[in-house]
Length: 142
Image (cartoon, rainbow, N blue to C red; front, side, top):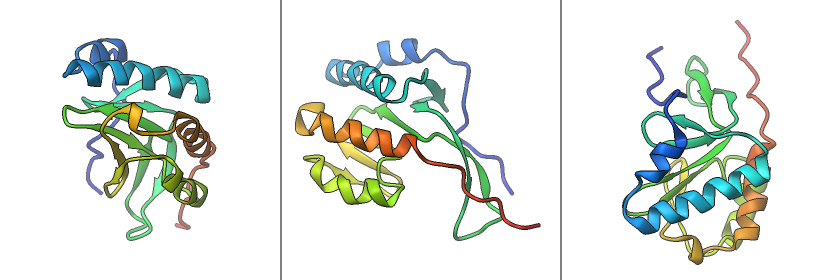
């Protein structure tokens, strides 16, 4: 099994968010940090160079049970073109609630939002709470 590429770091989340560009992404990133902390009660951790993550769980790939590792329960990244939100659609309850979020698009493992004004922040809080409730995947039998 290869090394997991995106892992928790000791880098400063505050420094990362303060450096986000353009300014609208920085502002939305700071707002998201407040919302995620409010819902989870957890301190953020920078995963890799650009994802602000909250909590972690042990995952096992359904496609290949030998592929497993640690991943954040939920998180976000204020990327240049859009905001990436992680963990919101991983559980069935989150996937069912997602259409109520507002204007977004989906990637393989995340939800993309152009700006926070495009979404319902109360629905976002519910999605974060669902993601936060995630338990570790069962470890495969040896």
